[in-house]
Image 1 (cartoon, rainbow, N blue to C red):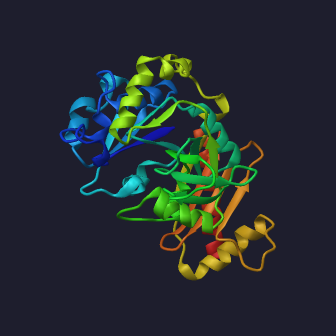
Image 2: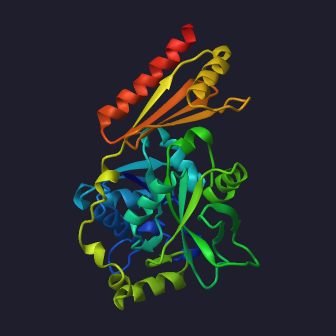
Length: 339
């Protein structure tokens, strides 16, 4: 699994600490906030990390460079101007072809990453949001879920509220999101994506954590984070942080292959009808996305791309198998075009 750390924000509420450096570089006991996040990711075996940058980006690059000194591989996603919490991620859609985790650069946490991944895969979620209960949710987005933890409503920074389960800014994202909701420019998870996902009844689920988490968004929270670390509140709930965790074998051995198949627009109804017929869909209107479950626990998703034919995603326990499955359905689509 890969990770994206959002580090482009200006951090106005954290001034004067952010006047000369990027917000993720503000130190806690002589170590930048972002270094704690990198160490957390590395402890779960996640070493390929993308970092979105904008404000004072050189302070980040000068310290972390390519990540080798920290045991990870860092790729920077430079934004010429702020693109919101999701805009920079959409710039890297061609590099993220399997589920990935997103962390905010100013978050101080020891979140149970392995549990979140298991939850995400079990729910077959398009996006999994990590939540936490707080006393005062006024400065955060409040999540509302059904009995199965599916997100059914989301209210950003409410003046009045019912419930105190807030968005931590930590997500697991399936790359299918890029193709179902293509976006450019400024894009925000809370303001732009969540309303669309809820309206379309997408599989967006909420994992509630009881792990340590603090949003270092202002001087008061910054002070409390330092106190927590000094008093052992961070370490005491993060015993697993000092040793490397391996994800379960079934999670590590999942591979995804993406394949683009060209198809003339006029032939698409015929192809979609064939795909839906093969999967037993009796609806008079063929579905625009077909999911085929395989006996070995993997699956193939075939999506109608309005501009470029069809996109095929195949997931399997072996890389070669996922490739073979994608190619198999790619050949079927080409064959049906000739009939």
